[in-house]
Structure formats: structure tokens, C-alpha cells
Length: 342
Ligand code: B12
Ligand code: SF4
Ligand code: SF4
Image 1 (cartoon, rainbow, N blue to C red):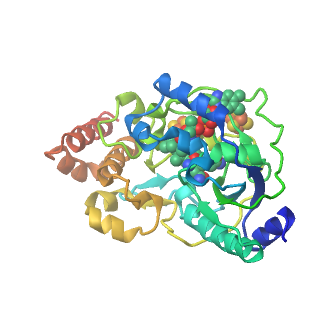
Image 2: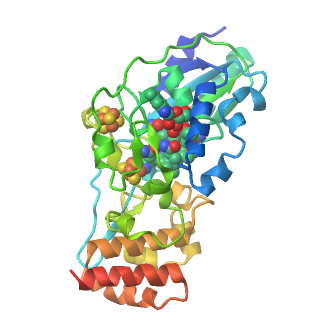
Image 3: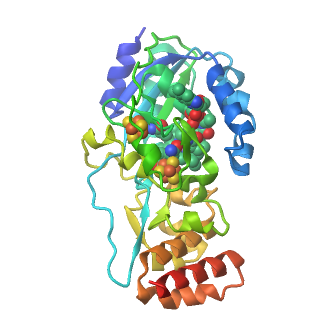
């Protein structure tokens, strides 16, 4: 019979960066806090629907009554690649670091291999997730993979918050690890730096203002958000870029090639592409996941152009400003007036 240490050793040999184990009791405290945040209106309608069945999200036993242990894991995605590849006349929009490649699928593939090893040794049944229908941050915190930063992202002691999370849920019992006794202390740099003031209190995010959330919401952005959007085509990492814990993390070469989209994409290319060309060009990545609204990505490209202010992009903005689509037309007109007014 294998033990927790054998699972961790095998997992590390598979290239999984950190592995801890926890129990399957429901995450009642997290459920209460989540409900509080919903009552306070900090969720968008989309997220309300997405997490409709909240109790199931926080209680693994509902879907998998025989579950005994959660093997929690994380994969670091901090690489030392150069980010802005813009040329004059061909400005690029940034892709948030976590989705330069598909680290969720990469971690899930590694966890599947680990789960098969556990099954061979013990006959265990299992479920494997990364970005799945379970409360991954509370799982990571209870298992000791990391602790909550005030930006509400989990911080690992070695890899900072530059990690994606994943788990194996199994019907075999393994020795659980303990949560870490660490917090952010007096620091509040992420709260102060968030361009849209979306971190409304330590650990509490107003999702309606978070650029990562709005990146995939299709509508006309309020001016105060559009003006601080900068050149972000997909997502935002400011709260992680400024974190002093992250500045100590060592960058490494990419651990996977899966779903590689690069660090930035030409905005003119995005605006000249059809949706099917876009989905074909960037397969197996978050930015073309089925729930991603391509029109929102093109809207983001128009907002980027309004902030980059390159006069050579006026012709394409003029074209979008005459669109029958109200969101495109209004956003392009906003961008043109930003460029014309300097
Ligand atoms: C919905 C979602 C989002 C939403 C909402 C994010 C959020 N902070 O809730 C949006 C689209 C904004 C988003 C953004 C990002 N996401 Co996201 N997202 C998710 C998803 C699918 C569900 C998360 C969720 O809604 N949880 C429910 C909420 C209520 O839980 P919570 O945030 O942990 O809330 C707790 C705290 O508020 C805490 N709390 C409240 N008061 C207090 C007080 C104290 C003292 C303490 C300690 C705690 C505390 O209690 C609450 C309940 O547990 C998960 C995947 C998953 N299945 O879990 C990925 C996930 C959280 N996302 C992930 C990532 C990578 C991101 C981004 C970092 C991407 C990027 N741009 O780089 C950003 C981070 C932005 C930010 N500042 O949070 C990773 C996070 C990895 C990590 N290191 O933690 C996850 C786990 C996916 C994965 N498998 O790796 N995401
Ligand atoms: S991802 Fe960007 S917008 Fe969202 S909380 Fe962090 S800094 Fe703010
Ligand atoms: S910036 Fe400071 S407060 Fe925010 S997560 Fe990092 S250490 Fe915590």
C-alpha cells in the first residue's frame, strides 16, 4: 500500500511543482463567506449563474459520496519571456501571463498520470480537475499548497501566486497536510495598485470591476474603466505584478507547449479576423474556450487602440466606428477621440 510520501514523490517525478493532501469535509466557512459576498452584490449575473449550485461547489461529498482525500497540486507558470512585441503601426495587446499556454490542461494531464499510478497501487477511484467545479482556492489553502493573498489569489511559498491549481479527489484515505500559518501582514500593495479598485477590502474582490472578469463581458466599458485598461487584450495581472512575494519567484523556461498563444497578439490582426479564424488560430487555450465571447475580445482590441494612441490605427477605428453594432461603434468612437485629443 502506498503512502502520501509515495504519491508526492511520483508526482514530482511527473513534473508537478507542488503536491499536498487534505480531507474532504465540506468547506462551510468558505460557503458562508461566498454567500455574504453574493448578498453584498459583488458578483456579476454571469457568475451567479455559473456557480448556481453553490453547496456542491463547496462540498465534494455531494457529487462523490465515497471521497476520502483531496490531493491538491499547483503548477507554476512564471517564465522569463519578453512581453510587448509591438512595432510602430502594429501595436500588440497583452495576454495575461497565466494563459500564455494552457496550464490547466497541462496540470490535468500530469494529475491523470498520477491518478493512474495511485489506482494501480491501491485500486482507488478518482476525479481529476483543474479549473473545475470545486472550490479550488479553499482546497489549496486547507491542504497547505498556499495561503490567501489580499488580492484573493492563493500564494505558494516557492512559486508565489504564479500558479494554477488542480486536484485529484479519491476514495482512498491518505495522511493530510496542515494549512500554512502565514498571511500578508501589513502589506496592501495589490489593493492600492489595482487599476479599477476592484479589491474593495482585503480578500474581497468586486468582480464587476475586475478587468479579468470584464475581459469576457460584451458591452460598452464605462469611461473610468476603459481609460485604465491600458493595452490588455485578455485579462489583467497588476495585483500579482506588484506583489513583493512574487518578485522573489525564480522564472523558468515554459513547462509545456500546450495551447501556446504567445505573450501578446497584434490588435490589427484581431480586428481583421473572423471568429472562426480566431478559434482556429489559437486552439486549446482559455482565450478561445467555448465560453469566450469573440466580440468582447475585439471590443478589448478597440479599447487598447484608444489607450495606445497610434495615429496609424485610425483607418481601422474609422471602419469600426461606422459598425451597426452599438458596442463596436461607441468603443471605436471613444478610441478615435482619445487619439485625436492626444
Ligand atoms: C470565478 C473565477 C474567477 C473570477 C472571480 C475571481 C475571484 N477572486 O473570486 C475572475 C474572472 C475575476 C477570476 C480572475 C482570476 N482568476 Co480565476 N477562477 C475563478 C474560479 C472558476 C472560481 C472562483 C470562485 O468563484 N470562488 C468562489 C469565491 C467566493 O472564493 P474565493 O475567492 O476563494 O473567496 C474567498 C475569499 O473571499 C475568502 N475570504 C473572505 N473573507 C476573508 C477573510 C479572510 C481573513 C480570509 C483569509 C479569507 C476571506 O472567503 C471566500 C470564500 O472562500 C476558479 C476555479 C475554481 N474552480 O475555483 C478560478 C481561479 C480562482 N482563478 C485563477 C486565476 C489564475 C485567476 C487570475 C489570477 C487570472 C489572471 N488574470 O492572472 C485572476 C485573479 C484575479 C483576482 N484578483 O482574484 C486560479 C487561481 C490560482 C491561485 N493561485 O489562486 C483558479 C483557482 C483556477 C485554477 N485552477 O488555477 N477568476
Ligand atoms: S486582476 Fe487586475 S482588475 Fe482584477 S483585481 Fe487584479 S489588478 Fe484588479
Ligand atoms: S501585494 Fe501584499 S497584500 Fe497583496 S497579496 Fe502580495 S503580499 Fe499580500
